[in-house]
Amino acid sequence: MENYTTKLPYKKAELEKLIKKKIIEADRKLVESNFFVKEAKKQNIALLIYGDPLAATTHIILMTELKKAKIKIKILHNASIFNAISQTGLQLYKFGKTTSIPKWQKSFEPISFYNIIKENLSIGAHTLLLIDKGLCLKDAFKELKKASNKELDDKIIIICSQLGTSEQKIVNGKFKDLIKKVPKIKEPFCIIIPGLLHFTEFEFIKNY
Image 1: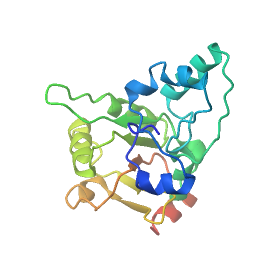
Image 2: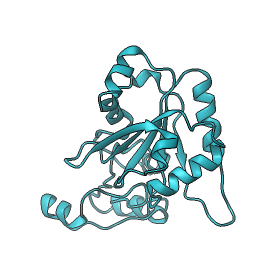
Image 3: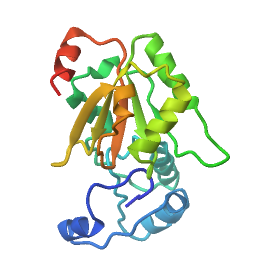
């Protein structure tokens, strides 16, 4: 089970009990190595992924390597954040490019994600912001505020937490208000910057 894309909203032991099998946690180094190619030549092996298995490019690369080795592959598609966000009431076809807010390091504070937001807003498109594992909402807000230089202060933003679970939460409000009183949000979560809202979208989100 890959453990580096996002924080799971349940415990590994619960999943092991459900499938009655021992689960090995796989970091990026293991997934990107030849481990799966070697093991799949000897026995059936599955890689468990939170969300849809092909949403991340790492898994596409793994599938390519398996095909080169002439190993049979079966993909079990799953619900993903890319379709779960439709629960916000925003129309999926109106989303532009997706980008990620990275966890800043002391000597590295990239803000390229904000360029994508501006590009999407320029054509009225919504932006889905994925959040690096381990980055809390408070710190994500700090990075977004620094990168946007107050340009988003009066924009309505939407925060989605643990979509598809019994603990799911959807919150919206002006960025400048939410940053003053950061909502209690659990991982995994994402942030949406709406673009030009259709009246049906506006009617839906104002009733959160």
